[in-house]
Amino acid sequence: MSERYKFVESFQKSLFERFKNGYQSWWPNFIFHYSDVQNIASILNSGKLYSREKACELGLMANDNADSEVIDKTQNEYLSFVRCYFGAKTPTQYRNEGILPKHEVKNGAHCPVPVFLLFDFVKLLAVEGVRFSSGNIAASNAKIYESVEDLKELEFDYIYDRGALPNDSYSRHILYCRHAEVLIPDELDVYDYLRYICVRSEAERETLLYRLEPNIKSRISKIIKVFTKDGIFYNNRLLVNSVTIGENANEVIMRFSNAERFEFDMRVIGEDRRTGRKYDKSKLWRVPPAVSFELQEPIGREGFYIRIEMNGYMVYENVIVPKTEGVF
Image 1: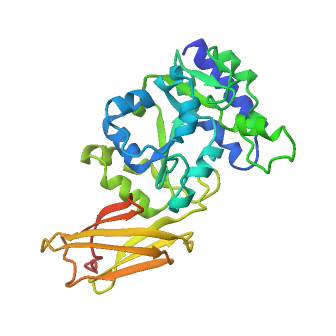
Image 2: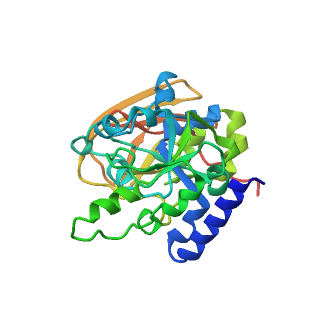
């Protein structure tokens, strides 16, 4: 065990002693990274989490959920680092999490189906060459540290703070701290550090599993968790909660959470895996809590492929099958 590892382990214990209530009491277990489900599936299939620069170079960023204005302000040097956060529920996540109406998408910042990777705090920070910041690295006064002992310089009372902001100029500094980052040069071998994968609903878990390679799916399915408590997601915008087949197997039912009366371009693409019959339905919709459509014939045990898009973004994809009665 290296001296660096021992130091980080000791520092983690000090965080547990400082933060004993709420979700901040377990945050010191993890370093957080989130992105849209399509990007996360690509990461998990390859086993590599790349820097923004390298992901773009390799054509692996299926959905670019970053704010273009913020990226433009980030020093080019740090675009070659994998970027993670000390805490979840950052201000950036607040702006781009969930299915947004078109008028709310600013500078391309949109993460319709967010998935979190939770990495081991001690193991990751113990890696030689890993850096960390006191706050948002896009800020002009951002401090970047290379010595692990400088973890003591970080303001974790603000990094972990998610309460209401004060009505004074210091609120900007708190927002800066909430974006404190961990920076890994070039790329990260995900499975050396990954502990959990968190999604918001069973439908989003199904979408992630559908997009994984079979060997990867069998390897990690048990650590993919539907996380509905507070501490990772805001859960304040439209999301697909479940997609099921009706009792007579000739109806697909889509249920949503946080349904708002904003208009969405909704498209449902489907294929009956038994008959090969295809469906492609589009509608400008003020999304209600549940939407259904009938099929011309019952779905067989081969299942029904379905893809749901909202405003052109994929928000669900899977092959669903009718429930079958047990032997007893």
